[in-house]
Length: 376
Image 1 (cartoon, rainbow, N blue to C red):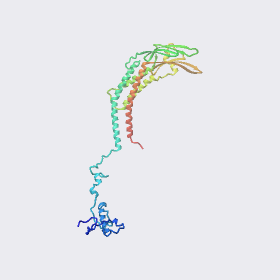
Image 2: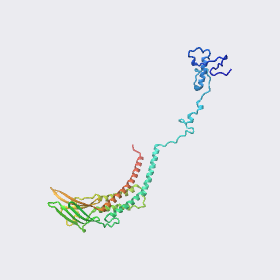
Image 3: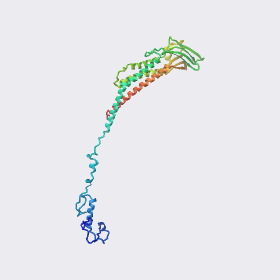
Image 4: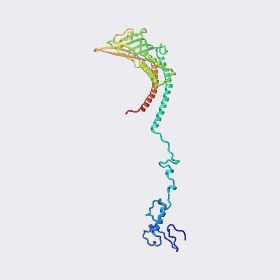
């Protein structure tokens, strides 16, 4: 006889040559009774099948004695024995062992990153500021000195080595033949002038007067602008080229003085101070005219931007109120145009340097104010 059959155990193959029909427990409920006599008992077949399924599908320890009362203990099928647990091999959460579970370096906090950025920014600002103090300030001051000396040489008055002997002659007219004036401008004074202008009275008449070299007409604006320009140059000359600026206040103080002098000098030429009519009639210049003008007439010379302007005034008494009519003529003065251009270039250059230093000061103040704790 052959070995035992797994499905028909403990029954061995029957002798006699008859084929044994294997019937499972689920076929016993079909109502077919013809094959019951030739199959093993339902209880034995079910137990054998249960043991087989138990080995494959059911984990060890989960079979109750009621379900398989005659089952014997089978070797445990431990999945962890054939497949390594993920917690020890693939870095499960909380695991600290294994070659693939090295902890990454702890990230720096956001506050630390911001502090590092602020330190780097502060260092860059400090380096740039020191370069401005030690290099750029002296470079700009040298450029300013060259520009202002060139401007001083354009003035027709003694200024920073300039002789001031320049003399120009101009013709000023106002149509239609209302006014005509031929003037000689020497330095800041009109040394000679022939003046003719019409007077609006009952009958039109022409008033004539002149300015002689013995009593020149002083134009104070030119001398004022020259004085302010000289001050700006002196501020630069007072700074030694080898001096090292230590603080921004030193630079801002010097630049402020230079800017103030340049602005006053330019304003003296661009925005003239016009005198009241009564003050003009009592001025020293009016008394220098030859012949003197009547009490109801007055003239004036002044600078506005790059032009020399001549104005003739006529006073009238209208119902007890004094009014005046005016007639004006002007001409362009070449050296005034050059002086104003140089004034403007120097002002822009000086202002740019002041703004650059001011930016660093503002950044320094804002950085320290941000660090200062806020009160509750």
